[in-house]
Image 1 (cartoon, rainbow, N blue to C red):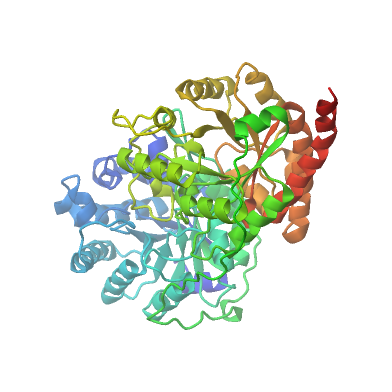
Image 2 (image 1 turned 90 degrees about the horizontal axis):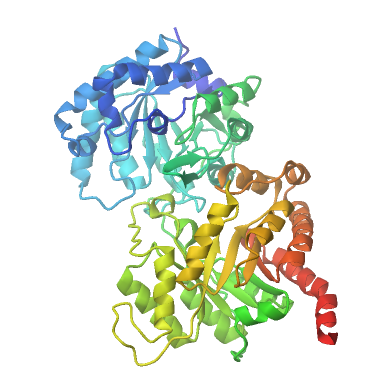
Length: 629
């Protein structure tokens, strides 16, 4: 007999299983089929996945029933088999477990953060139908996972509590902002769910360990309520037609103890995780001694009227001074030229952004570059902030334009607006897919590729609209292209870069580089190109930041030496070491490139103020030599 589940997580940490869908994908089952139908068609395959997780040490299995509801199954003509598929899912998991693990009935969000045409009444009916089938096979718990809205989660929890008194685990998929899509803080959302009968509160999917850890840390835990975490294995990268997740089992295991310290009593994995990730997690937690839950702090009492608060205070003042200066492409031919990226805010308070922009202007940057909702996370319009930076600070804005967010009509309209405002430096990028951002239900437009958007913006310089119709005057855009050198085959990336230059790119900005040898290799591989390259450097902010970049961000690999130097550092100490490492990279970069592109981590603009001054001070002897020659 297994111990009572509620007693089990009261006294220790339970290790759950890992991914089912992405693991089946790795086995060759294509995206676009119903994985839940495999419970009926190929139960031995599902059972084999469960057994692999059991052999890895998992103490809880999730049934293969995430999308086994009427609405999702109807897309495959399987809506009449809801009960059959769900009951089979439980039987397969129980057979594989053979009594060695708890079995939780997995119930996924139906809306999934999207504006689908499903009423609350329909949600109530669909959830009750699915959970009744799972409960008829006597699952040990109900696991509500990958929910984006508190409203939908409350409907599902209400149905669960109407049907049963078995433990219910409620997991949200949220980004680092720490709010549900319908506007509730995680603290408020958790408090409401706890009052309505939830046993465990937590997070899964959407982001890797770092993102979930960031949200958990804001709860001020450990709490006197058990928490659960099932992160993805980092961010997905699309390589050679396949989705690849970068977080290694070792990194996942290291994060598991940090999760436990923050109050997690149920730890498993979501997309991209494998039995290897679970095995290392089991090993990492083998000797972990959890403090009694009763010693944790209580959740603050939520308010049913909890709403988003917004602040528009802090607008910076400054004098106008938008004098005409040479284009970036002209400056970089003569001297070291510094572009600094400062992300627009996620809220309505621009105070710190303008403060940072002013400090960077004072330090001597040549342009401030603003991303276009990077990582598909909603931020303030870079057009509006670019105009303020230009008008109030006299600092050149360099604006990113993503193919993701606007169709052909919107993109041309956007570019015409830039021309009217006198913003003439832009960077054309593809843009991360919307499903990875804070509004996963948003559409990714992609009317154009990055090659096409470069060509069409340059077409405006000829006085020709996207439609081919003549315009009354010509634009004056200087168009940049992005370049990721952090790849296995650098020559292939350079070939792609050559196509962007052929489309009309005037300059290149690279992704952050952390390897001095790669900087030299980039110079050698691009020596034949006749447009300037701005080498990207982003100072590390802490040891955790370094491990996140190394393990979870596609295309970035840190050396063992850099990871060792950053290990355990945080706060001012971590940032100081990050600046020192960045200076060492700049020493190499400045030997080979005049163009320097500094990225600002977490709005710590002071780091790039110091690095800008370092570049300009270091370049003085060269400038003096050039003036004498």
